[in-house]
Length: 106
Image (cartoon, rainbow, N blue to C red; front, side, top):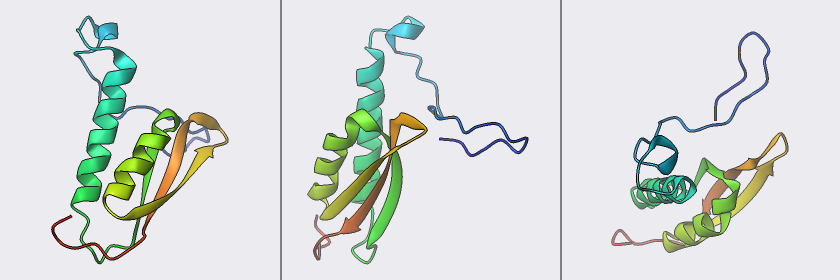
């Protein structure tokens, strides 16, 4: 997601990095599945490195990945609140809060 343009244009939402091995670029991988796998793998990695003293964090995710994101967050002892953006329903704002004390060996 990018912020408003300084010239007053509306916000735009998109991927920050192109994927070149997807079918739309001539590659073997189905586009949406590849993006979802990358996105949820990145979320898993980010949550896995949060120390136990971190009580909350925020992320932007594709709305269709909300259920999987919730399961990943639960794996690390977080509760989620996921809100779909009114101006772009394909994207959601995800807030995770620590639901319990988590040991260092996750």
